[in-house]
Image 1 (cartoon, one colour):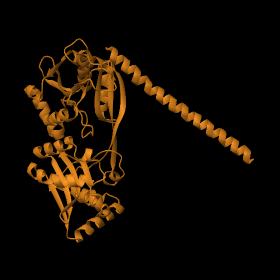
Image 2: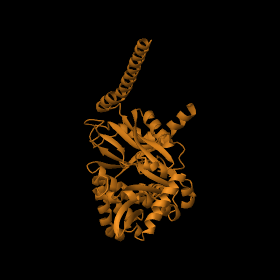
Image 3: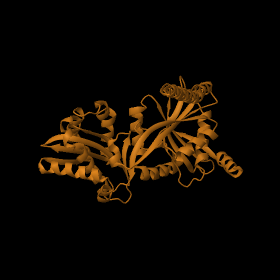
Image 4: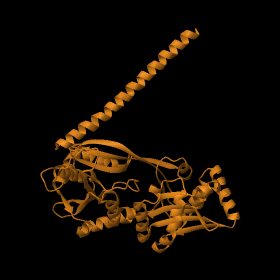
Length: 403
């Protein structure tokens, strides 16, 4: 323990925190660090991704790009794209800084560490200590809270964030963020993947596929380029409008912008199932960083009994496994029952809200949120015990009556 703390102090003293205006301001060493991360994660670490998120979800907030580096050499330990906001409901009238993340969690919080750094907790602690003392807008007032999300439950990243926030002196509260179904498909062909589905599911998929093929009117189309996307969008909009899905989720402006970004960068996989030349089902997938993400899916309710969605899902998975050779399938957030047959694995994502003890707003927010959580738990537990006692008393009275 003493050795670890000593190493922590040494790294903290030997490091410094820098702020950059945007990604074009990054020195060569930071660009090299970012390029390596892009090779591993693809789209979700590219500057264009963060520009997309800021434009669509953090439009009134400010981008803050921080680096933690060795004081003498300038060697980067960490690069962290963050946003500064005054809109966080957990911190009333406060300044919050946090990770730039998509509401649907396509990837974990973008904290980009040099893989060779041994003390990632210490590097992150140095950043959090700086944020605790830094002014958000050039005035004496400091940040009141930090919000970092998402991290997988039980992951090394989650542990690193939690320990770094605590060591930097923040009052930390974790919270459940989302549920995700996925499957590791490293080295799997579609044939091997499909053989691992249940017998009932395999029979159902094949039966539905054969039934549509026998009509001679089935078309399965894959769109990947910007030009083809433009001509395919009417089909996408038509099916979305006739489906059970909310139009706001299927063709919101941020969704269409994401489709265009993916098409330009080569990550788009838009599947369309047509019967008699009419679009019956659509699916928007993103293939990046070795993972195929199902972002949107819908089918026209008029074709529900033909299971067009099942047939299209099977087509999309076959393509990303045999042509894109992805190592993972990701079915997005949510606990929908239909996902279980396609994806064997599940995980929980969570986030952290950390309140600064150095500001009055931070301290008041911590008092309001952290003890309140335990009070709620105690109340629930008390109500549960009360309900059990009532049940026991009623059971005793019933037994006495029967006797």
